[in-house]
Image (cartoon, rainbow over all chains, first blue to last red; front, side, top):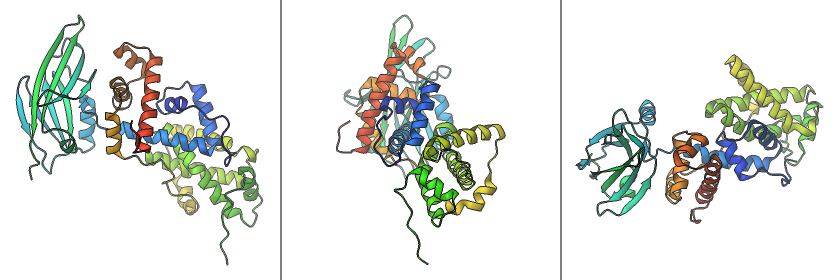
Length: 184
Length: 190
């Protein structure tokens, strides 16, 4: 069986659910049994596994306080800068920093959910993030700015944070962060 | 003395029978069996133990147990070796969880036979993956972020986004398929 083409391959959806722990136990066991019996499907499953594991390792542009703490715990060197609504701050990477964190301050106590748009200096959208994690207690949205973003995006970046209350009221706040060239 | 080539085209059952019979090419059959199943056992380990080093340890333990069984003629259905290996994996993980110990002595004694831990996953270029993520539709991107970076289950994502858990899965399948095509084929637009 090992060397032959598979006649009953699990679907991509099954493999994706298997690797995201979203397959019922019976189906999960059946997929697993098949993978042990079929080299070509095991290879397909390995490609999905690699993708899923790589996705789990990605640092998203907005992080939760728990993820930030985990990054610190893992030895990532972080420089955090507090940014008040309407303010413009300047930040820079230096050799002793792996990650810049912009702490966008806002009263989020009543927010049902929070969206965050990232814009260039002219207001043109770079990307938009819906339902971002927030630190309600500290009242902030944590932007994780990685070193390679500096080459990827404009130096002068605006963040528009929209907090949506349970009654549908939307409160929008803007922040501006200028990324200087790396300091040595 | 000439070195015999491994028998890669032999069916699993024949490998097991040669090992059990201590035939002249039994060592090659053992190596081929290990090479054939190492990646599959490691995948199982990654899925159930989560950590790379634990998965690597599992490969060593399971393959040693399978070889011992094959040598002793204890593989009752040699032609269904995959099912036997799966059973050993499940037992070892269950036993490990219970005992929290590794049988390092056996691993140290026989490690020379076993394949190196690289029998593993296809490497993924992180920058390439980030670019591919940028090509997803917003809802796909949100579901991917909530699933893999915020570790939220489908039910919770569904509640937050006002859609059904089934929708979440469909969006996630579509996003993963697009991401896989994008990272594996740089010429393909995500």
